[in-house]
Amino acid sequence: MDISNKFFNSNFQKAKALDEKGTILLSDEKYDEALVHFLESVKYNKTSSVLFKIGKCYSSKQKLGIAIEYIDKAIELNEEGSYYLLKGACLNVLGNKSDAIKSFIKCIELNPENLTAYKPLAYLYSDINKWELAVSIWDEYLKLAGDDAEAYSKRGICKGWLGNFNSGISDINKALKLDANNSDFICNRGIVHLLSSNIEAAKIDLEIAERRGCKDASVILKDIRGKVKVKMGELESTLLPNINEVDAKGFLSNISPNEYFYLECKSTPRCILFHTLKYISGRPSFAGGYLLNIDLSDFLRLCGSGKYATLEPILKGSVVGTIHIELDKAATECKIEVRKLEL
Image (tube, rainbow, N blue to C red):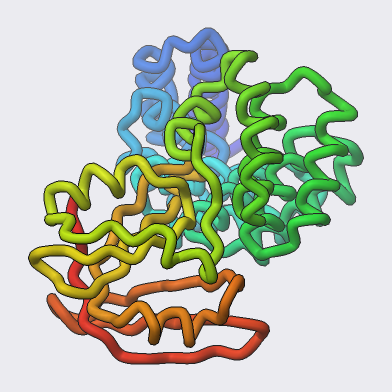
């Protein structure tokens, strides 16, 4: 054996020994000590496996930027699904949802039968309101995994946001067959009822979930407890004359999700005050309200007596916005003045 081969074999053995020792330390969650061994190992033999382990150590130490650097170095040498999985997790924690999604998709492409990337990918799609994509990922996951209560429940919520209320409820009922006492699943069914404007059914589920300790249910019930849904044709019964903006804020904080009220304010002669629920990381929270300069008769004409409508103000600058009203599959658009009411 010539000198070069002896040198290579010596370095290889050193790298291997350091890697093995570092791997034991990593499994024992001794990240600092493991790093010392892995960083020394790559001096003798740079492999994708050891580079990935360095990234794993840094991610465990919450040094996510450095972790991604080493994971990318590992990927340059060898594309592995597990590498993209950890990279996606790091990117997600850093708030880089778009690149995290790309990493999870790549992980699935490389190893479609590895189930670990499906759930975080579906959650990310839900976080950015890509409900159809989230449903498609849950579909693929359930085909591979079989019955999974959490997956059924989450897919049900996504279907609710898409307006597929019956299918969403059906999914959550499947979850409850697998785990009948899960308060989160009961809460999720309540949310789908709420999205479908079935307030009474929503209250029943949410109150059960609240009694079983679900904090999310308690938050939502603060908005809807004791409230009755308002049909557009009944808006005249909700006239509150001469209310000022301060009173409006207090009133808005107590009305139910997706209820619409016509108010006559001192500061704004004609307006409609409303609020909705929005979702942050899959959790409902208060979205705020708007004062809209539109006449009640025009509003009722657009919405139709006894009908429900979806209003989505899109702010343009400080005062100009657009209301999109969808009624019986026919969309009507009118430009209005809009002013956000900060709470």
